[in-house]
Amino acid sequence: MQTHVFSGMQNKPDKSADVWIQLARAHSQILRSTEAALKSSNLPGLSWYDVLLEVERSGRNGLRPFELEERMLLPQYGVSRLVDRIEKSGLISVEPYDQDGRGKRLTITKSGKKMRQEMWTIYGPALKTAISGKLSLAEVQDLRHILIKLNT
Image: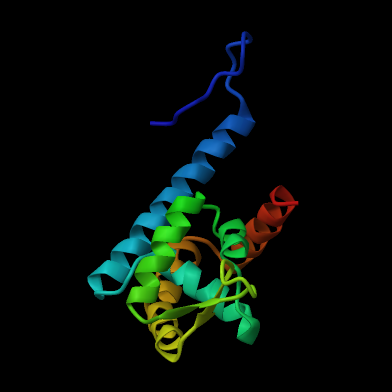
């Protein structure tokens, strides 16, 4: 069954809304299948992977919590709690950054790098199955270009 969103008072199917619905459904399905693959391997969820990846990308200088928040697209309180859990697990280090000690800097630990790499061994193939397993190489390339346009 196909869902149509009707635009305003015209009461006609809106193609942009249909695209949005399909995009949202695809996103949700890929997230569910990827999260399930990580869970079945007894690994943390995608939010942990995203934190570890962003902190690792920041290099030796680390990342300020507000910078992570901007990249994670989660509310501040969500990122703070997530960072606390990941720090307690020993995967990232939270150190004072400012001279007054109020600022913090996040860096990835060796265990964090190892965990992110282990997670990628599950996450990468799950993405490949969810996307490349259903689309041709040309379709993947076309979709990538289209999504880049939507993100600019």
